[in-house]
Amino acid sequence: MSDSAARDRDVAEMESAFAHPEVAPDRSAAYGDHPDQVIDFYAPRDGRTGAPLVVLLHGGAWRAPYDRAHASPLADFLARRGFAVASVEYRRGGDGIPQQRGGEENTRPGGADPVAGRWPETFDDVAAALDAMPVLAARELPGADVRRIVVTGHSAGGHLALWAAARHVLPEGSPWRLPAPPPLRGVVALAPIADFTTAVELGVCGGAVTQLLGGEADFEERAAHADPGVLLPTGIATAIVQGVDDIVVPQAVSEAYVDAAARSGEMVGLTLLGGVGHFPLIDPAADACAVVAEEITQLAW
Image 1: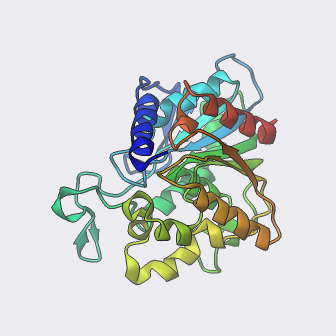
Image 2: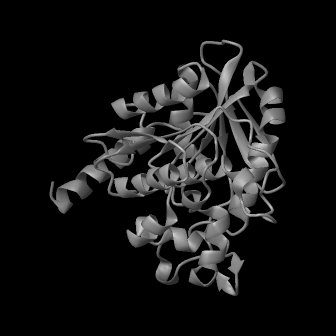
């Protein structure tokens, strides 16, 4: 396929994924004081009790224009598959109010894409949301089984899902380090930005990884606290679903993570979907979304 045809297909897939109406949650709850520190809860549509809880972390290159709203059709899709779902919002970069970062505003020059992520707030929020999840979910979704939690995320959210499962192997002294593995059934990462070295080499999302860590000056030091590709092994069941024709987060990024896991002595499942790009994984109208649900089912039930 030519580069032009690949770009055209990517646009068509993105338009399809974003064409679904936003689905309102059944309940929402704050896990902090910032407006972005909120979790939307979706009850299983069949009314079952004891349903596993899927924690959903949306993508969008850690940039503010992409919030949890675009992932709400996926949350509803999973709820219709019998899961309880918790869709997490978190602070991202370039939220319309310039954020000071080392004397530089958190927007790119010339009105281009906003800077990706906020250090350390993006990580503060994901850690806080996961720590609060059992209590909040038990209160807002009393039918959910908080002993069976699977974390999933797409693209940048896939990175955060892998990171959330690796907090117990963060460097000593990290503010997000856990003393023991988090109580998760597993992680299903969808086209995740899973290996920072490879993602930077490929220029994924317009240099978003470097922006997430606050620039090149602090990259190496901060990557040790943020790069799933070096936070291994985790001992937590992990599966990756990746479109072979993904030109946003290419297959090579997922393969680099899987290879790093293998070198650490850990096996990570990798499901490659032929003829699939980046966005069908979160598009309820696409067959790939059913594959995602099945991967979550295998870990959750």
